[in-house]
Image 1 (tube, rainbow, N blue to C red):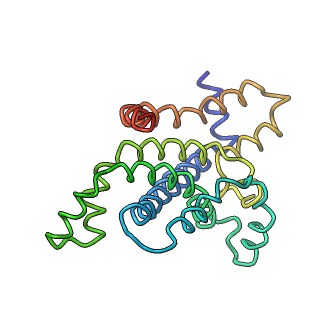
Image 2 (image 1 turned 30 degrees about the vertical axis):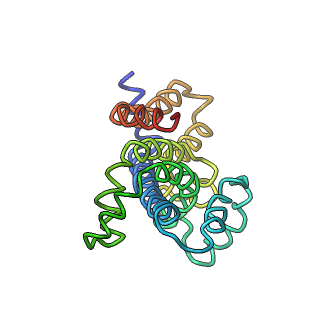
Length: 223
């Protein structure tokens, strides 16, 4: 078992792949949820014209299949020089993970009493202070649930990593596993299975760390 782990770690370049996937998952998931929380606060706690239009515009990102973005995304990234770069992958994952958290957090924030906001405004608090000190602490459970979901999706993503990266210093862990399987599946299948097992461990560990918040978030969404 240990020999298979060592061989998988060296052949699949799992160290760099795990680091890249960890960066993409943490940065992309956290940034997307924070931006979604800001957008949800504006859509539920601030009165302005066109709120329904802006919500539907953001939510439309969940309606269309993600595969339809591949060609324009690849062409745009080539023009901007963002292919084969960690920055490009983080920007993409952040953008693609915003719409669904907006839907969830908007519904959750709409149920929070607005009297808290009005009392804070009377005391002279700014909108960002209200968001940071009042709304955000009440949203940790759904935000933790959303982070776990988005991190797992980014960690397991293969198609966009294949299209946007082909260098070892930028490709994700799943992309590295695909290369390993194509090269060694027929000769050393045990190494491929061991690498796949190792790739699943971070998601499991993250769930164990956030399980309390995850279960609380599921209970809140069922109410």
